[in-house]
Amino acid sequence: MQITDAALEKVKEVMENNGGGFAGILISFEGGYRLDLVKEGDEGQYTKIENDHIGVFAMQEHVTRAERANVDFISDGPTSGFKVTRDMPESESSLMSQIQEIIDTEINPAVASHGGSINLLDVEEKRVFIQMGGGCAGCGMADVTLKSGVLARLQQLDPEIEVVDTTDHASGENPYYTPSKK
Image (cartoon, rainbow, N blue to C red):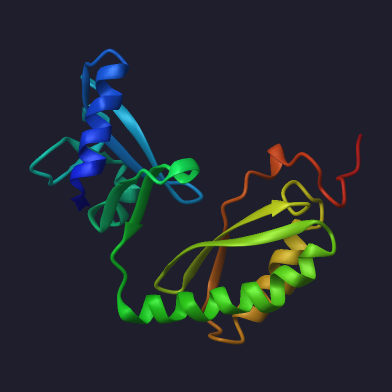
């Protein structure tokens, strides 16, 4: 687990601005990496990750990802914010590049006609984490798109690929197909 000086400084600033009393940060993976603050006294419900500079915690199911996380703070105008990445074995990096190319050139042009998009979040072994956006978020046909379109195409690369949809479909605001109302 690596945290840059810029990220460490920003985390400490955020802790101070929120009244202090924090044990450190929580790294989780829910549709992408997420950082939260952990209040003192609450750290017992998480697994502590080795770090010499700040308390770093993760839920048990996210420990492996957290241990390989690299946390940085980017301060480039409107795109300022924390950036969390992870060290990736060459095989995963190569697969991720191939999948991103398919999403960019084949899948997104197809779902764009319905106002949708598919975002590649991560690849871990043969598990591909995606998030659906636009007209795909909350769409009644999202599962069909995922299984018959995205998964079927990606399994042409490797039949063992599994796609994990991290989209919160309940919060989709403008889906192309709306679920039937009862």
